Image 1 (cartoon, helix red, strand yellow):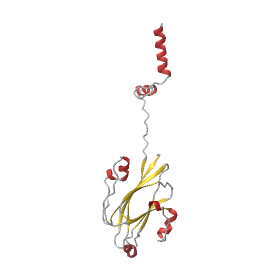
Image 2 (image 1 turned 135 degrees about the vertical axis):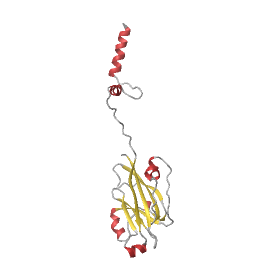
Image 3 (image 1 turned 90 degrees about the horizontal axis):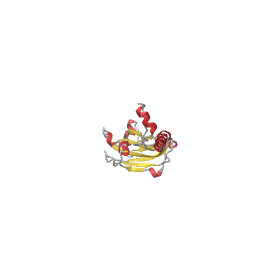
Image 4 (image 1 turned 180 degrees about the horizontal axis):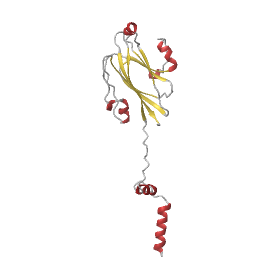
Length: 195
């Protein structure tokens, strides 16, 4: 008599209360047995590649005689939910065709938690600024322009850094102060946040 009630109690508990078996609920087990698809869980990725571009910055003499420009500004389009972003700037000679291997891109290094590095391909320095789009007209007119001074580097070689500014009008500005030698620069930006 007691065994009969115990059996009924166990059956009621099994079907009324969800239980876990190897991380699955009874509902998931029944769906699996019935051949229904299991709901996929989406893993959140905290990094997004925002920019990976090669730009050319002419020398002053080339700007004067060939119509090039010694200044370039690249818009940083941060996705919604960005908390901070990382950048890597890699200079090289203007004739170079160098590019990072897929496993060496800045995005790959950050997402796989590999050591960060910059492969400088020239000895010529450049100036680096983070500006907003309000400063763009002054930059193009070669007047003094406003910069975020915490992120300024002048006469520098390649480097990587982190920026906590998340405005939607930010730009990376590169200036070549060299009179006769132009540069190519690989500009990489990776955003970090809730995506």
